[in-house]
Structures are given as C-alpha cells and as structure tokens.
Length: 296
Image (cartoon, rainbow, N blue to C red):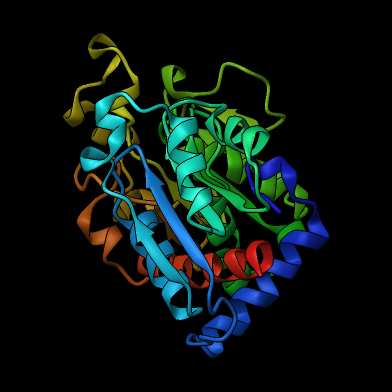
C-alpha cells in the first residue's frame, strides 16, 4: 500500500487512522508491529518535524530505520533516483518515506518498484503533504470532534503551501462546511477550492473555532513577491488582540516552522489557546498509525 496524495484517502480510512493514532497515543511503544521491517527515509529537502517524527514512529514500532544521507550517497556521483531506489529494494527495504520538490516523484517511484515496498509521501511538489494534514485533522478531532459544525480559518500563504491543500481536502471530507482561506490576494489560491476567501483578516477569523496559521513560503516565491515582514505582521499576523475576534475557545494551530513576529506573535504561539506543540506530539502518533496501516 502507498500514500501519495491526500485524495487517496476516504472518510472511513481517515477515521481508521484516527483510531490507530489514538491507540498509539495510549501505548506508544509497540515494537512487534514492524519487527524485522526496514523503513528508509529519503529526504531531498530539509526537515525537522517530519523527518524526526517518522524516525521516532518507525523505531517505536520496532522497525530498523535507514536514514539516508543523500549528500553522501551515490546520487552525488550522478546515480539516478531509480537506481538508488532499486538498490535499496535489493537490500529488502520495506517502506520509503520520501520528501522531494518535484510533484510526481512519489508516483514515479511507485510505478517503478520491483518489490511490494510501500511509498509514503512526506511532502512533495507544491500541492500535497498528507501526513501533516492528517495529524492536523486528528489534533482538531481531539479538541473539537464535531467537524460539521466547525468554522475553520486557514491564514497566510495558502497558494504556496502543501499543507494547506491537503488540509482543505481532509477537512472537507470530514464534513467541515465553513472553511475559510484568509490572506493577501497574492497568497490566496489561483484555483477555485470551493472555500470562502477573505483578504480582510478580521472578517476571515471572526467567530472561528480553529485558526490555522501558515508561514510565508519564501523559498517558492520570487524575491519581488515576498512582502515586508513588518507590514505583513501588521495586517495578517495573529496577535492576542486579533485572536479575540475568533470564538473565546478557539484553538490556534501552526504546522511549523514558525516565523514569530511575522505570521504569529510569541504571546499567541505560547499562549493558552495554542495547540502547536500538541500537533508536534501527535505527528509521531499519526505517523505510527500510517506506518502500521501501510507497511505491516
């Protein structure tokens, strides 16, 4: 089995993964689940949370983890991606966790596998980051499980965010009807995602149950398109004063890494309504659930 895109999962499968994540949250170490399995982490882009949580998740399940240093691999000697994958397959790797800048890399790997190894997308291209979106949805579910009656505002650089596109899909599948995309015009998606869009920050988060903040993806933008940090924070940064526009019990989320003082203030990031570190913690449990579901 593989997980390449958020659209690969239906509601029943998402709920199954929630149940598995709850199980691992109650009992994190279950080392017989993937005993004698090998999980290879292939990260062609930088990562802290995703790479570390997948490694911890695999080890908690009893798998051997091959954390390949691509800078020291034969790919630096012009070995092709396909040759690298097939070399690792020959060593009996059972799962590939892949992060890559190209949209179709994971599909390409799946189409060329010679074994029954699983492929799990750990973020690719500009459109998809399924494991992050699953842990985000799971974290919301723990606090506010009635998805159909939630108002959720996703704020910031939505156009360039892989997390946002996957989150939009999962939240819709789970029944969210009031899903808002908030940001300056340059950060709103070009395509119609069937969501309400707001360029006015206050209107966008008014009476929201969940405010999910995204960073500016400067690495995917032309320098001339990157807004001034000070003016952006003034208009779109989440501060304690602006947060009062949301519901009193609203929760604040951020997939990380955070740029404090740009998209979110320290007082909000570390405040009582923030569940950002719970997202990080749940990342391990959800990735345990995914490896269990896909590999064994």
